[in-house]
Length: 404
Image (cartoon, rainbow, N blue to C red; front, top):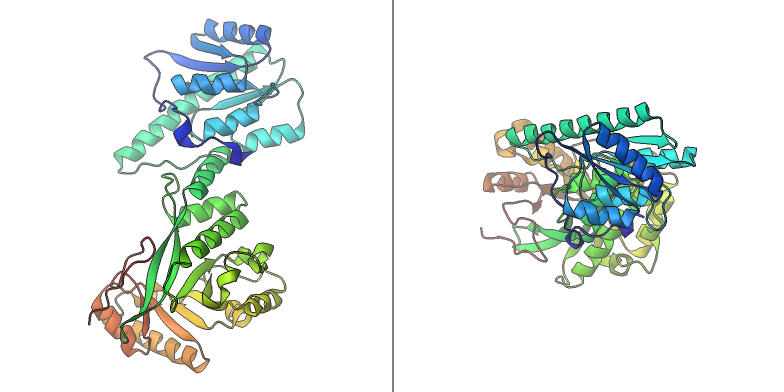
């Protein structure tokens, strides 16, 4: 399983690099000694430098010592299977092509192998020309992957993103393992006080360098429930140390509303519900969430307050407003940016703030970076503000600069 993948700091994998001039290296992994020798002989006859080992554990140990251009592995082996080995390899090398072989083919195994990033799935016995063609193509593709990364570096980018499902699973697991919550104050500058803190996820995983990348990975892997539960647990644990007169703002993905643990009385966040505001972004539609109003009723029964985030961005419909009837609305930073220079933005914020106030909703202006923006949104009737002008997100709990 992905959760069984060793942490990066427990394996000293060699960084992928081109082989010595003229050498193309292949690691053959097969518990059938006779077959491993036969494959080794065929490949060496074509000029490949071949190392053969007899199980997945030995393969991992070998890969720790040197990189390979191609890995050719049996699927069914005692101990660590070829698919399990692929998961571990992908946690550390996103590019090396892995070709899996089996004498007992099945549709299910083939689908799993390909979904986890196996380049080819070969049936034993493999004809010589098919084997050589697969290894040659894999070697060339590995060269292309290296050149693409070099090109990205020359262009000022260092793309470490996982290219397949197995690699992405490893990166996502490390993101969950290293995740922590940063907090940014939401302030009432006119009164000189902190109204609440928004919890913002952070992780020490270079391949998923920002919250959007982590969220995208969770969606691709169908792991949104795991991400949501982790964020809520970490937020609750940290907020137990927060000042008692402040609120905790926690972001929800629309699909978090389908997670039964969100509604459990014993969940960490529910225990703090009277101090928690759940934010649902306007950038995600809620139309696919059935019986949403009954779900919202359960959240309110527990004591949660609700907010609509990113108002003025994303979807223009009213489905989230109708379903949530939020107590708090957060204006998207695209409206706030340079509002003091834009009459259209100023009038729009003024109208939105007035309308929300008439409906009993409090309004927060997000993305306030300079004093002129803060002064302008306050004059538009929006006293609650959030942004770099007051504090950047940081470990629990940043001080806010509320000097006049």
